[in-house]
Image (cartoon, rainbow, N blue to C red; front, side):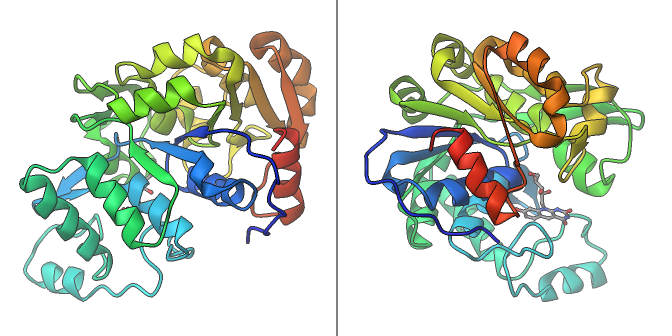
Length: 315
Ligand code: FO1
C-alpha cells in the first residue's frame, strides 16, 4: 500500500518517467502522491504489445492506467480488480487459445482501443482518452505509434515477449533480446524528453522494459544529451528482482545481475542511480560508473521506504 505524502508546495517543473509495467506504475503512484500530476509525463514501453484474437493489447499502458485509477488487480499483478473470466471459459470450450487470458472487463479496453486503431486513431490519442475516461490527468504517452516488438531468442526458439513471459513463464533461458521495428519516438515524447526538468527511469526491467524504449529512434540520443538530469532506480535488490525475470535474464545475457550491472547498463545516459540499502557494498562502484549514487530503502510496498525513496531523489 502506498502512503499519501504532503504535496510539495513548489512547482518542480515536468518530470518525465520512463516506464515499463508494474514497478513503473507503483512508482508513478508514489510520485503522484508527492507532486502535482500535471507535472508528470509517463513515457511507456510498447514492446510488450500483442495482437490476440484480432485485438491490440498494450499491457504496460493498461497496467499504468488501471493502477493510477485504483482499478488494478493486485492479486494477479495485471488486469482489473473484480475481473471475471466467462469469455475465456467459453473460448476454451470452443478450443480457442487461452494461454493469454483476457478478462471480461479488461476486454472492453482492448475492444475500444482496437476499434479506434482501425479507424486510424493513434495509440497516443487513444491512450490519452483512456486515461481521461478513468479520471487521470497525468500524461501517459506510448513511446511510439510505430510497431515495436520485443523478441526473445531462447532455448526453445524465437519468442514474442508474451510467449516468453506468459506462455513460457519466463522459465526458458534467453540467448538474445531484440527490439524489432523501425520505431520513432512521437513528437510528444521528444518534446517531453527535451523540456523535462528531470527524467527518471522507473524501477522496471532494464532489458525487457527500458531497453525497448531506448531502441526507439530519438530516445537514447535525448537521454544522452540530457544525462545530467537523468536518474534511475535499480529494480534489483540484493541481486534479485522484486518481481519478474530481470535478475536471471541479465545474467543469461552477460550482465551482472545486480545494482552495479544496472549502473553499467544505464551509465551512458544516467548520472544518478538509486540503490537499495541491501546493496550499499556496491555504492562506490556505482558512483564510479554513473557519477552519483543514492542509497535508501527502495521497496515501494513499504510506506517508510517509499518516503525515503522520494527524499533520496530530492522529491
Ligand atoms: N500476465 C500473465 O501472467 N498471464 C496472462 O494471462 C496475462 C494476460 C494479460 C492480459 C492483458 C494485459 O494487459 C496483461 C496481461 N498479463 C498477463 C500481464 C503481462 O503479460 C505482463 O505483466 C506485462 O506485459 C509485463 O509488463
